[in-house]
Image (cartoon, rainbow, N blue to C red; front, side):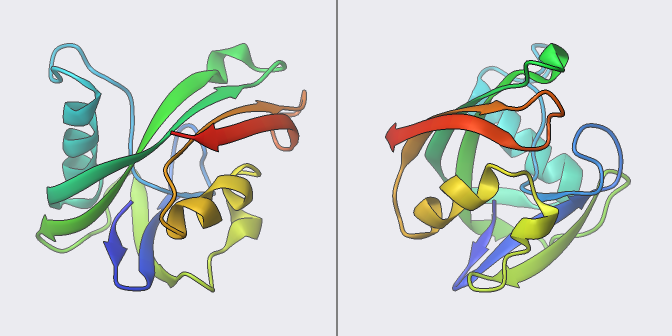
Length: 147
């Protein structure tokens, strides 16, 4: 997630997993392209919104479980990027948009985002486990702590 002062860049997912939701940019580890998860984050930011991260800090690690859709289960590493080269631009996967910290569209995001994102924006580094209900839309239970 790119940060610009009191603003955060979110991306509307245009296709695939999470379509129609605002989220950070990102994707899956690719053993052909990435040496580690940090490389994945750098590559995905460049591929999805056309910027090259200069300063990136890991601020979260989350495990997501979807009992009704186990193929959606995943571990997510979250980074904040405060310095980059280039201007964020739309791609075939996402449409990026800046939001003020007090104007985040939680009603158009994953249900868990309203739990952890405010903590990240307060400067905390956290880890969490989130289990969704059978529909995959609502949080059934969660546990978060410091990273």
